[in-house]
Structures are given as structure tokens and as C-alpha cells.
Length: 360
Image 1 (cartoon, rainbow, N blue to C red):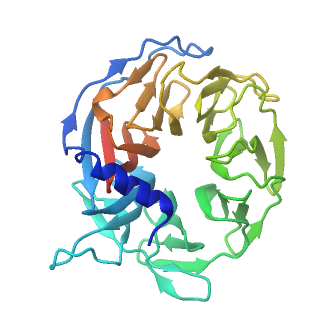
Image 2: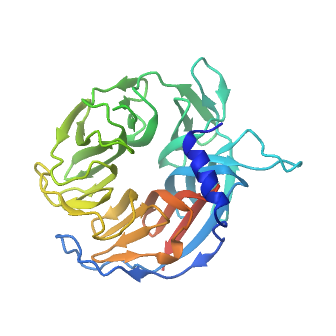
């Protein structure tokens, strides 16, 4: 069986009905004063949304997404279908590929400890291009798509389970995860880094400006107030930064170097400080009343935040909330934007769900 959280989602499903498969073309101004950068409205809030539920139930879920281009994207997780006898096939699909027309389900090979190959659920995906796609599974293995086939290998050089991949190339790829785990792949071997914490490292993001690459990660445990950390990663060195003003429950981080830095979780927090990141502002219930799981953007005035109960927000100098994407029994766990395409993934009831938006 899958982790305990899947049983909680199954119970939620029994309490209501499935979220309908619809298309939306609307947004709502949440009427909140924007952060201090006061970026002008240069991007549209106007997206056409297509919602797809994947799988037949059994607590199917999508955990992460990577956009290659307008007609190619990958979403990963755990997706169950029923067989010809209406019973759930125990072999779940662990990847959905957007081919420009529909989501195609795929079973990606994943290696477990001891060398056995299966199709274990995938936690995270990151892509450098259509022929260079990386995933990491709950079994502790990475899988790599080279444009022709998938290869997989178990990774022992880590402290816990996977949460998020990020990198600048296939020879500079970071994996963060539970129990303070941060690992670096140099194209040949994985190296376990010393993070200085046993908190779960929930997210990692990096960006390059003026020839310098800045990498930050955020850590806290999801259910217990055991602390919080913002970590700066420089090659193999991990340095803690100030967390003044931040809550203990943190889940996502994103920034536009030198312009705006965001941390989300139990609230939305931001700063424009580029030296010590010590002046975090914002808070819970200021922009949204819902828990925020993820944040990603093109730049400081074009970013998305995804969260509980289908909360999806866009910032372009003012905040907009896409209320038509709300989920009574589900959440958006991750969101990705590239150019004029945005994809959010998660679950609704006992099915996996994905929202794909195209800016008009």
C-alpha cells in the first residue's frame, strides 16, 4: 500500500463528489496591496484553463511537474487504472506526458535498494530539455530520459526521501529531501552534502543573474514545529540564512535574483534584500487564507503560487486568484510556469489532477 496520507485522501473522497472536468477562462482580483517591488502590470492574468483528472481512483496523485515547451510537459506521481475486471491494477503509472493534445500515462522504470526494478511512485521531475529529463522515486532511485530510453539507478548518497530536483545541467543537479538530505550529481557520481539540519528540505530553486548563480532551499517539518531554515547552497557548501519573521511550516521558495525573494507555506513571505535576506515580510491570511505548497515564476512580476483546496494565485504587480480552479477535496502540490504556459498538479478526491493554463 502507499503512504498513510493516501488513506486520508481516500476518506476525503468518500465525503463528497469528484471535481468535474471543465475548462475555465476567468480570474479574481484578491484586492491585496502588492509587495514592495511594485512591479508594473506587464503580463496578463487572462489564462484559458483545461483541467484533467488522471486515473480511476485508489488515491492517485501527481507530485511534481516540468514544462519543456508549449506542447511537451511531464507530471509525476502515482496513477492507478482499473483493469478489464474493474479491479485496480496494482502496477501504477508514475508519469504523465503532455504531447500537445492529451496526457499519456507512462510506467518509468525505477530501481530499489538491492537492484530490483519496478515502477515505484515518483516524487519529483526536472528537465533540461526534451532529451534530458530527470526524475526521483520514493524507492530512492533516479531515472533519466535521454530522448530514446529511460535508465535508472539507486542512489545511496542521501539522508532521506526525495522532495525536489533542481540544477543548471545534468552535471550540476541537486536533490533535496527529508531528514536534511541534500545531494549533488556531477554527471558521474552523487555526493551527499552536509546540510547542518535534520529538518525536511522541502524545496530548492536557483537562478542566474550577471553571471552569478544563486541557489536557495527551504526546510521545515510538515506537521511538527521543530524549526525552520532557509539555506544558501554554493557548490558543495550549505549556509543557513536568517529566518526572522518566517513561520515554522515552510514548503516552497522562489526568487528573481536581486529583485524579489519569496517563501511560502503557512502564509506568503517576501523580501527584496539581497545581502542577508533578513527582512522577511508578509504573513498568513494576508494574500490568501489557504496553505501554500509551491511557488514558481518567470520573473518578479509574473509568478504563481499553488496551495490547499485548489488555491492558485498569479502576481503581475497585483495578485489574482483563479477561484474557478478551487478544489473542495484536494490541493495543488506543485506549479510550474514557462513563458505563457502554466501547469499545476495535485489531487482531488482519490484522483490525480492537472490544470494547464495558456495565457491569452
